Structure formats: C-alpha cells, structure tokens
Amino acid sequence: QVQLVESGGGLVQAGGSLRLSCAASGIIFSRNTMAWYRQTPGKQRELVAQIYTGGITNYADSVKGRFTISRDNGKNTVYLQMSSLKPEDTAVYFCNARNLFVVGSRPNWGQGTQVTVSS
Image 1 (cartoon, rainbow, N blue to C red):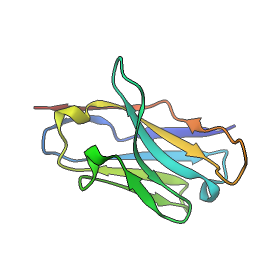
Image 2 (cartoon, rainbow, N blue to C red):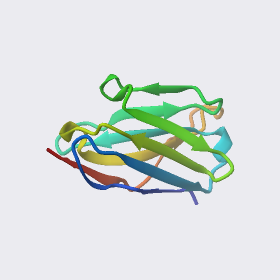
Image 3 (cartoon, rainbow, N blue to C red):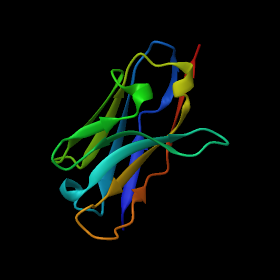
Image 4 (spheres, rainbow, N blue to C red):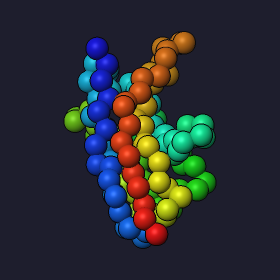
C-alpha cells in the first residue's frame, strides 16, 4: 500500500521559513519523480516544485529563488525548503509521487499539510 505522509506545515509570518517533509512507503522511491503541489479553496491544484530521479528540478515561477526541493533516497523522503514566505503562499501542500518509468502509471498523493503565512 502506497503511503505519502507530509509534515512540517504550520503558521508562519511573512518573510519566515518552513521545511516540509514527505515520507514515502510502498513505492520504489528512487524510481519515482517527486513533486510538491499546492491548492487553495476554489482553485486548481498547482505544481510548486518537482525533482526527477536523477536530481533535476523545476519550479513554478512564483517560487523560484525562494523554495528548494530535495530528496533523500536513503530515507525515502522528499523535502521542500520554503524561505521568504509570502501570504500568497498560503495553501494546502500535497506530496506527489509518480514512476515515469512505467507507461501509464498513476500518481500517488499524500493527504496534504496546511501552510499559512500571515502578513
């Protein structure tokens, strides 16, 4: 059974930092592209950051230079270091895993963790 468990969310003032973690089980972590998405009420879930199995990363323009995604294959964990947080970063953040080596594979999702940035 696949499980993605996010942690590290919370309330922080604008300009502050948070680090999100996502611990994965039930998947071959090293063969999964990992990503963080976020969603606010009434809006579609949007990609925040992604890290491929080889370590290549990409980011949404809105977080470039402020957020860093990383992975630890030994711990089956992906991280999102968030700095210089803004009120518009307030959202539920979801961890996502997908094995792109398997044609037609479906993504797996965590339950989400709330991040609230106060002004």
